[in-house]
Length: 316
Image (cartoon, rainbow, N blue to C red):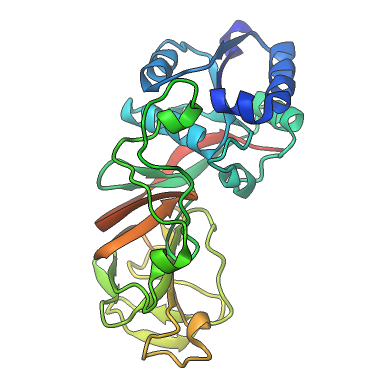
């Protein structure tokens, strides 16, 4: 690579402790192919300085989902996320690396490093919330939400990305029972201003996803602009605002088995599924996971889709 394509390699210090061999292999491949500045930040200030001084270096992150999010949040605050394609070498540090897997990146460090060195770049939509949080892939509420970090969250040298997450993030219970409750979540859900679920209809889970990360179910209810259902709609999806394509998130709402509007045997299959640009969820102390990282409890969140909000080097 030329000097213009040198690398800023941001290495999670926890990754070296969790899987030092994978980190070593990735660094060997990267340094063999391009001039590389290796940064092992111990706190948010370190990371922010490294990004601010990167010049024209390509940013490569070695670590888990929390590391990718820490870099993405800082770049977003600087207004540079959409113009800074990222390379990701996934190494599980305890925060998981499901984001890289969902995006089709190789799990092997050498292969992932070669992808990060490549020229095959793709733009992805993301979702931002009303407090500045980001979801690069998906949001889940209710069933399946599990805490991935201990509380309280602190900036502790040597603890890696766990010291870089937002202090506003609070730990939630890791049990489904605590996340959902015996009678389900009572939530009011609006999609582009239309009410698509309300407090009288307990839900088991809500899943929001960009770029097809929500898979259509075999049974669903298509929702029209007035919020009424049109029955079993197969695998199709309807947009409440009449739009299709980029800039819309998939919204999947699954009824709770205890909900009276669903038959007991069919409750888990009863879905409302649609696409929308802005989704608001309010209710009593619900938790949610952005790309697998749990946050909460909260009572209100609004997520807005940002088309082509970030860029990634992907396999050819």
